[in-house]
Amino acid sequence: MNIVSLTPTDCRLLDARFTEHGNSHRRMTSALTEAGANAARERLAALRAMEIRFSIDLASLSHRFAHRNDPGTHAIEQTVLAYVGQWRCSSDGREELWVLLDRVSEVRELMEEGEGQLAREPE
Image (cartoon, rainbow, N blue to C red):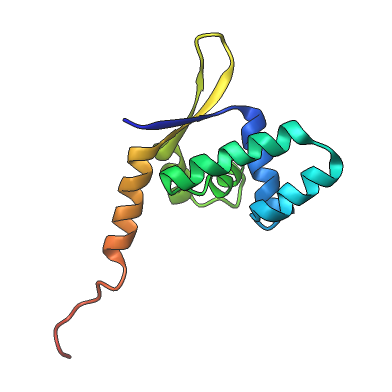
């Protein structure tokens, strides 16, 4: 099983990209550069490289995961999020969000399988 492990700081950084910068890596990188936040900019670049490598939008997932227990979040979305990600304690006691990439792929395949699959019989 392939796993991406995100720290709470990673999740906050990705959530900020999603909510404050329209999920634009370029805009957030520019804002971090202007603010002189070099460590955050470098970490954001590393996270973006993981997104590209594994074809996953970690910012959207982090945002959705942060709001999974909000009253307006649909029960199906909560279930899917619980299936593809889980908070775990690392061996040194720190929390990590494990994104289970194999499960993300399964959900993606299920969604793509259902697209355009209307009944094909004539009326």
